[in-house]
Length: 289
Image (cartoon, rainbow, N blue to C red):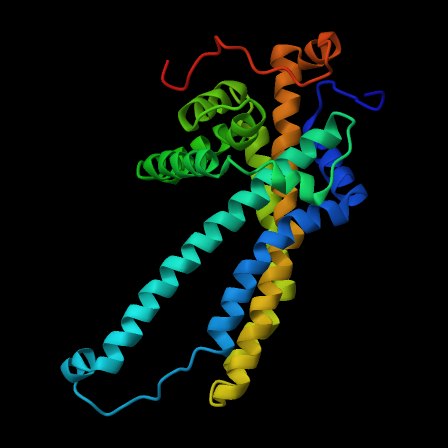
């Protein structure tokens, strides 16, 4: 615990700590993000390279829909979409949760591994899915009242995942907890989101866009299109696993900074006899109060 430096941070210091943590523990965060995402990459590559694409047939639309081959292809496509969505959600939850747990351990002066961080997600998937789902509903509901309210709600809920995992809160309680912690700090949340999306789009431009251009160039050659699409999937994978940890690390660091500012978390930690991170105050105002 000697290396713990918990104090109120400026936005620049939050970002500096984010990139410092990522740089010093690059392989750790890369592994936590990449291992679950490999499932998605494998699924995408299999769909691109192995699934046969039927040649166009001169047949009436009704006859096409009624043919056994078309019905089987449609059922296979629906099943594939469902499996893909499940794999994507599980991979996303493992990557998010594992990164948050890793940041917490490192930020509080302890060590961790890829396996230990991912194992801590066992038993937390359903709860974290509820947090992400409820967060998405809140942001989409606010977006219906124009774009700016949706952005504001997203900024206020930026710390709901760390709150859920590190304080063992349910979906609604974690959103209310984040709404309380980020009161008066929506501007800093927005700048964290803005920097992340700038880096993310730059990474996709670097790793994926060249392959998309090549797909258009070789549009008349199906075999080359498959190859360039597969390379594009790999480019998307690289961009995602390199950049997505930045937002999660920044979110966890921001969460601890807000607790230090508003709840003297640093003093609570020093007074804790076990050295464990204390939970948030039970009487915190809720999002609905």
